[in-house]
Amino acid sequence: MHFTLFTSFAVAFYLIATALIIKSLNTEHRSVQGKSQVWPRSFSLAGVAALFHALSLADTFWTPSGINFNFFSTGALVVLIVVLLLLAAALTKPVEKLGLVIFPLAALSLALKAAMPGKAHWLHNLSPGMETHILVSILAYSLLNIAAVQAILLALQDWQLRHHRPNRLIRSLPPLQTMESLLFQMIGIGFVLLTASLLSGFLFLDDLFAQHLVHKTVLSILAWMVFAVLLWGRVRYGWRGQTAIRWTISGFVALMLAYFGSKLVLELILERV
Image (cartoon, rainbow, N blue to C red):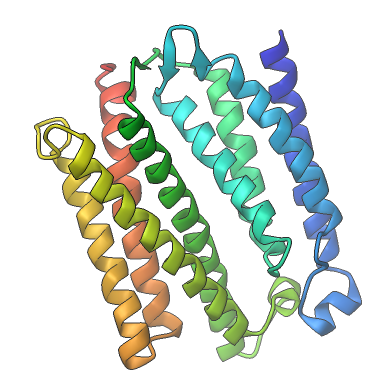
């Protein structure tokens, strides 16, 4: 019963927060100044939603039997961390508009988890090293997820400014240079976490290239290489605009396939855990 109530409250608050962001697009002074409040009201409601989100996971993700890492539980956890990182960033950065994508995604992840709980995929007796690897991996994916959303907004902003047809959303965003700077800050931190994730995997996993892990390892290394080249290109050649956007989204797609591609095939298509 608590699970249903917590999930319902979280979904409702996420959707209300999204509606407030949409409403804020009509606010004249934000459109003119191109920046958000330090802590917008929508993010206060999203903070309440995140609390209910965490409570909804408590009964089904962490249990006496272990950690349930099935597809929808893991997805809901990742989206929760994405929301928390976004809320933290909002204390100092103009990231309110990212909530237009992330908050509905959080609501959807919880709705899918409630509607299709799926088979449990238990992880038992994890060593501290493995727990560290899992935590760092999820943090890296979550932060680079936000970077991908930022890249999509940046692509829309760049396209509309080039065609001299900016809509209310684009006019409410910070200047293009600020958006790019924020994108590379996210990618830089995410790249450090992804590096730590790969290193901890080599240290604490017996064989990263075992049959059930090889695709994750290869795709994760590919994503690491994409982000490494992007950061090098930024420093060496000043890459920006469409080049930065394409490399960011390419790296995130590789990472998404590494983290969730196999789980999707094994758990939802082949019905194996």
